[in-house]
Length: 314
Ligand SMILES: [Zn+2]
Image (cartoon, rainbow, N blue to C red; front, side, top):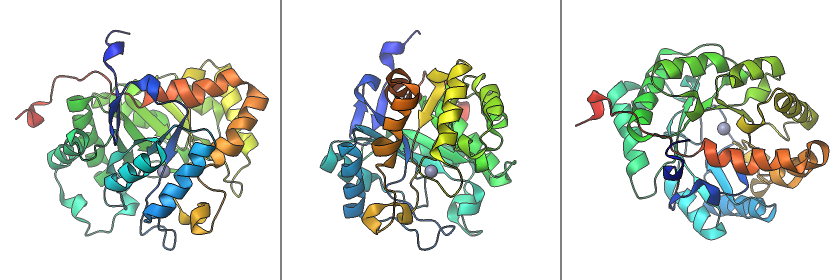
């Protein structure tokens, strides 16, 4: 664990020691607008603050917002939420999976290097900075635009040590994504794989976790797809396989219809108000502390930098 004292988490209010994050919701969206979800737009600051306050009341002290470029991302909005509620908020730069962007979206025309420079600029700016790069994969494949974004994210990681947070489509390709990023110079310990509970297969999760990557389950409250008991069983199975120190939990409330402040439900606080207490009752407080406190503090901390890629060195 060389350099452990030099790690930090980059929040919208500045860098903090990882241990100061506290109980963390590892995947949320306070602002999100995409053509894929018409009628589900979240762009209102007052409502974002209202949801964040409920999350704080339920015991959270930190939140990671995964909204990337072009989809309603609002660094200043995240800062306002953080200032109003006291939450540590980690924001994202990056680009989501292909389907979120129309054919003529300007991000598509950017070169690999230009995208990498944009990601780095968003990470090193002070007003307010991103603390993770969000990228996305399609169902069982990486489309050409996604491959370019993955390469750009890897360049930016090597330049900054920033964690890379990956949307998996229906939980597919986790292992392949980790291997692909490793081939681009991103160590598995800097890769967070989201939505793996959408393919609730503990054997596949264990195989992916064996690489050292972060396994994120983020579907509590998605009752129309599966009950929370499914997620609890996945957690129990992964902990039993020895991977309790690589698990992350989030709510991923990326739609206004799941936010109470917009008239929907169950709300941003569901993970902390309902799921976390149940996890503690059924699987114990120690495992809960790992998943909500100790693991996120390591997962969203910046890793050591590689030598800067030549293409970005100027
Ligand atoms: Zn998300």
